[in-house]
Length: 242
Image (tube, rainbow, N blue to C red; front, side):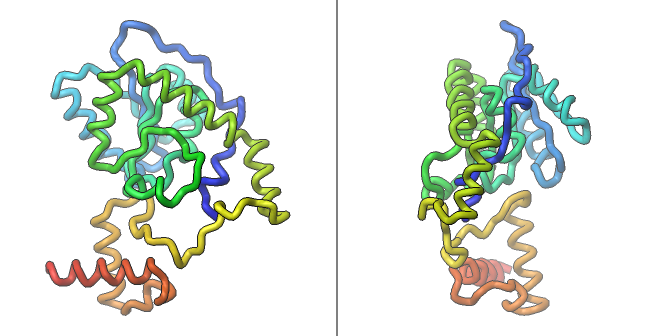
């Protein structure tokens, strides 16, 4: 089952009273549940570079706080940065911002292929590769009229596809077998090797260590699967360079 076809369940209680003020510098919010997995340090560095280049922004970062505090900070925000290594264009925090019509930037290596592997409709967040994060932030800072358009499209997507009752109905369709064929993907056909929450170097290093120490069988993958073949290819290419 393709996860993105089901959606993140969310409801009206996640809506906040927007308290943003006009004619002040843009406020960017990042609220990582896990700073390492969300790429927080790299996101901080990108924001520092942007500020050095003359862009005046108010960067808010909250972590390890209550959900109510996160929603409070969200009410003050113009743009939300979800995470750096996401394998979905809309995870939980992005969905919360989207129901409030706040434009969300999400990055991850899956952004290179998700339009090819996920059936429509696809969450309309600003989903980009990690090395494009800076470019996308600057684009939004320079095109404030886009905030409303992107936020509205995100909110409509939530209302049409991700409200709790809608997601519950999708699960019922799974249980009774009435789901459409495009929701299904054979795991053997999956060729995305990078995952979420980690950068490519860590994935590559981990694969090399596994195979060096325990052999290809340590991948615990079917040898006929595309995923297995791509990891073996990654291992071979990396070994040649070292």
